[in-house]
Every structure is written in structure tokens, then in C-alpha cells.
Length: 271
Image 1 (cartoon, one colour):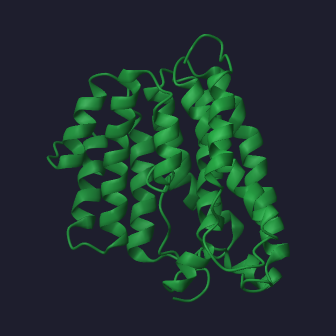
Image 2 (cartoon, rainbow, N blue to C red):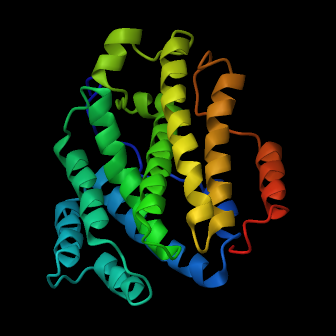
Image 3 (cartoon, rainbow, N blue to C red):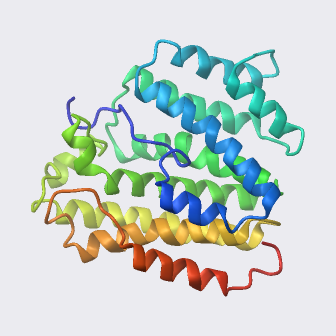
């Protein structure tokens, strides 16, 4: 695949590695744990179908779009969404936006500019942040906007974390204009590119973290997710900005320490 094309990586939810997802979800109230897992199941299934080029992927994406538009649809994913919608006011526009990102994946639409990348990250990351805001009990536009920023930050982190792993499979998820500016992100020759991309992600984290005090519930779990994910950027820095090839991994002891700190933090009484 040519640099900058978009057979994209995992979205905000399905891109969560098992340790991050498990650590965060265990800090949610039990009913939110159940619903977060159900949402994860929907997003993960669709993302996997699209990523694997399953012949039924487009039909399953279309079913979610139809359901979100108020039409009848019956797939495993829409049945879960129907159940979730009985407990939470799911935002149809955000679900349709997520599906738009999945359609970009299926079409292989190119990421030419940082603006293109930001729009894609909004579809597969930011839109999911908006859905989570609803599950966590708010439709406050400020909270939804900031949760969208956090979702885009997660997605940009996914791209940087997996850059070698994806490239080895013939995939590259950096905007073409950024590659033109800094060169291909080869190990040992990508420090400036990574500094630029980390700074962009950090700005989104700074915007997105302001969402957490605005959430009626789920604050601790969301804070842990953001902390663990942002730590991946710090690990890239500690590892020498991509001096060596390989997937970026935060050591388990550091993750455990960060989670422990959040267990001792009070989030306004709304967990």
C-alpha cells in the first residue's frame, strides 16, 4: 500500500489493547461495565469485519446506519444497540459518523493532509467518545465536544503505537503531506515526525481531559483510559522517538502504578 492511504487502524474502542481496556472498565460501576463491554463488542466486531475485508462488512455497516436513521435493521450489532438504547439516549449522528469512517476503510480513501487525518480520527474515535458521553449520562455539548477530542487523541496514539506493526503489513497511516515534510517514518529516522505527531495528540489530550469532570458517571474509568493511553506517547519519547523498530509498549509495572494512583483519586463522588 502506498504511504498515506487509509486501510486504517483500529478505532477508539477496538484499538484499546486488552490491558488498557480491562484496567479502565474494572473501575466503572457494574452497570456501566456491562454497557461499555456491549458497545465495545459492536465496534470491535464491525472494525474487524472491515479490516478483514469480510464480504458481509458493508452490509453490517449499512445496518447500523439504517438503524441510526430510524429504519428497521436486524444484525447482531443492531440488536445490541437496541438494547443499549433502552437505557441510554444513544446519538444517531455519532453512530452514522462512525460508519462513515468504516466506509472510508472499505473504500481505501487516501489521507492526504492532516485535516483528512483529523476528520478520519473524528469518525472512528471522536464519534465513539460522544457515544460514551451519553452512556456515562450526559448530553452536555461541552462534554461531548471534549470527549470527541479525547477520542481523536486515542486514535492518533493508536497510529503512533502501531506504526511499525502496521507498516510491516503494508499499511501506513500518516498523512501524505506529513511524510513529504519529514520523510517516511523509518526506525532511527523519524524523530522529527514523531515529535510533530505527539504534539498534535497531546493538544487533543489537553482538550479532552476537561471532559472528565463533566461526566455524571464513569469518571474514574475514563481518566484511567486517558492516562494509560497518553503514557504511550511518553514511552515513545523514552524509547528515543522510534529509534528502534517495534510496537510501543508501556511496562506493566508503570501501568499498574498509574492505575493505583487513580484508585486513590476522588472524582467528585461520581465514579
